[in-house]
Amino acid sequence: MLVTEYVANGNLSHLLHDDNFPIPLDARLRIAIECAEALAYMHSHMYTQVIHGDVKPGNILLDSNFHARLSDFGISRLANTDKTLHTKNVIGRIGYMDPLFALDGRLTVKYDVYSFGVVLLELIARKKATTVVDNVNIVYAFTSALARGSGGVRGLFDAEIARKDIMKVVEGVAKIAGECLMMEREKRPEMIDVVERLRVLRQKASRQDQASQRSGLFSWVRKNKPAPPASANIPANILPSGMCRQFSFADIKAATINFDESLLVSDDGFSSLVYRGKIYGVGTKVVIIKRFRLRGDRWNTDAEEFYNEIQMMSKNRQCPHLVPLLGYCTEKDEMILVYDYMDRGSLFAHLGTQKPPLTWKQRIEICISAARGLC
Image 1: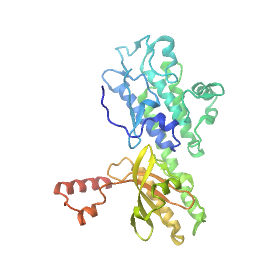
Image 2: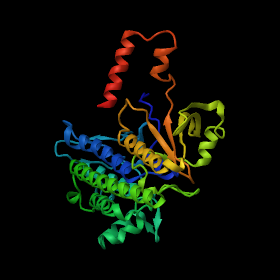
Image 3: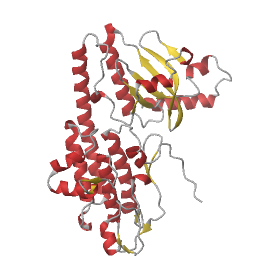
Image 4: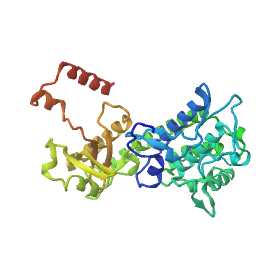
């Protein structure tokens, strides 16, 4: 029996194929990089090379912040001195298994590289490896289209990330996937090189996305000045590029029982109301819902404040000392943010009225955590 750490968000296969959860390109690249880093460590930084042998989305687990964790080492192998194993035992799964291994029984780290190439393809196509496209397997359809030029594979890209402003980045990921899937082992890249190339692509995507978001925001504000029509929508291109969920207004109303006053946590009387609510999905999660007031005379300012809060919180999602932003809602004329619920309330409440008083040690720890959040 093995005991492992609980991973809150299931596996990559579920995220990609069993849910309509939006997955921005930045999140897909981060997952790919983290998985590639794990394989690069196993292949290049361990005293004896480890071949995972079963790299697939179902074995890539996602923690509470959607960071990737490679799992299931049940059929992994330690490579011998010449870094090649010979075996007649079939390992891996259909769709992710290196076809060359099926031919000659040679098991090298390039087996994992091939499987990772299939995972990359699933990340940009959001289709299972067993999907049939034009009567052929999607992997074969992809490699055949790639051989005809980068333009040939665009039709396989997931529409959510097939935007003109980031198309070169997606094509760059497709190029790496194609190299991983090559039918000559020696031509497949090393995972340590794949990591660096994916990092470069992620940085490029981030720069392009920020430029697009700034442009989209200011053109949107100018267009709607001085106040929005009743059904104004925030354009999708200014929304966060991190792993945030887009909630429907129906989700928000259900979470707050149609904004029931008994769930109202605070009202600043000016720009926003804050509610406690419950989001229903895989289990029930208690959340804090911040609903911006739409004031005609200050609508542009409110929109920029809403956008800036999303931008700042999305960029700093990895900081454990900031309240996590879970998602947003921009249906019709609403601007709503959804945050994780902090069950012990605010520091103000503990300092002002609640008993027992905080210990000296607790106060120091709170100061340190707050300072780290500002770093």
